[in-house]
Image (cartoon, rainbow over the protein chains, first blue to last red):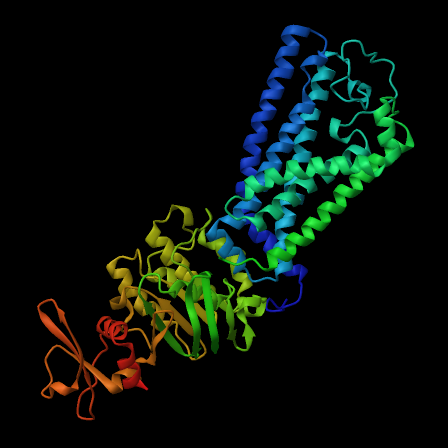
Length: 284
Length: 277
């Protein structure tokens, strides 16, 4: 491989990713691991200890707050990603190191994308899977039902009634809350990309206050996109006004799909704009 | 070769740092970059690496614009900044992840360089002192064998024996196709090392000359010459007086006192330009 080749090179991209991992990645994963580990420990303690002491052989649905823990894990990962992205723009030493890396601008940008979007998102998914595994395992144990894994439906944990559920009469298999259906997966991925894209752009706009700008942009743009999503489908808007909309109606479904498409298009546009600004980045 | 053409740069539009700078830097020389605090030495070094975007003009390294930061240019450029961070890994691991980006990197050179500074390739970089980190990073920089090596205040933080070793270390790595540019305030640390000196003042280059040219035209002495008209500049130094005098054929060549030369360039820039042109 010719390292001095000025064209985009996959081999060089992988070398850059390996370098980024060794220099910054392990540190990032350690921080994420500690934060998520703490959250998971609190969840496990509350879920198991409270259920044993209060519910006996049942699982109290009020104590299962996996959905909140999922949101907490997502918040930790997004904060870490944002901090990593903003840090790489604001920290002078890191910026110098990145600028002097022997690679094209596209390769450097994709390395950042790989770490902040792929690696950290994978960590988020693994964390949620582990927590859900604990929830299912404990439920099986406490209800003396080895089929509990199959018995828990694709329901939102907030509304699932563990105590009155008929474990002998089921027809669904379970996944973790986040992955109960493909819509949730797409929603999760797009929301994550949305957050990361905003912080990537914020880093190119203001180096010193990148994180603050990112948070402000996140709230403003989120509100704007949801409002615009609703306005796009006039029929749904009319239905919403009448307070009688059916969540299964095609219009409602179309609006949700349109909102996701707009979100995704926004993410891609922001990434393209961020890349163009990234090309102009220097040490100033 | 590095060609600097009409280079201008400003952090703030009201206060330019460099104005229409023109300079050529050739291979096979160790260049010293001197100047007052805030005159733009580090800025010029960053511009040479393509780390800053000039307001006007361009810098070409072997015909390529450095601001484009192409891999072909970056793989032949290495900068040792005044301050830097090293990750918490061993030098061996650091080499494993960074050396592949520099095609001329030599592990044997690195081991020899580290041995000169009593360092080991298995030392954890995070546990080293500031001076040791600097030595380790410089060892790696020289082992990359890049065509252009830039060092910003390299002797800051080094102990006295290390400063001596630094001079030996740099001199031994010089070659005909290499350019080493050292920016420093510690002129005594490097004056015996330099082939060429560049002095910046008032947004421009005041002196850009080979040491051999300077030595052929002026000489430095602590005793006044017989002919007082030969004196170009004089200053008090620890109870004595240091003189810079015009050199005739009969006068011996002396070592260049960079500190005195620097003061002459700052106080009488036109005089030194006339003498050396």
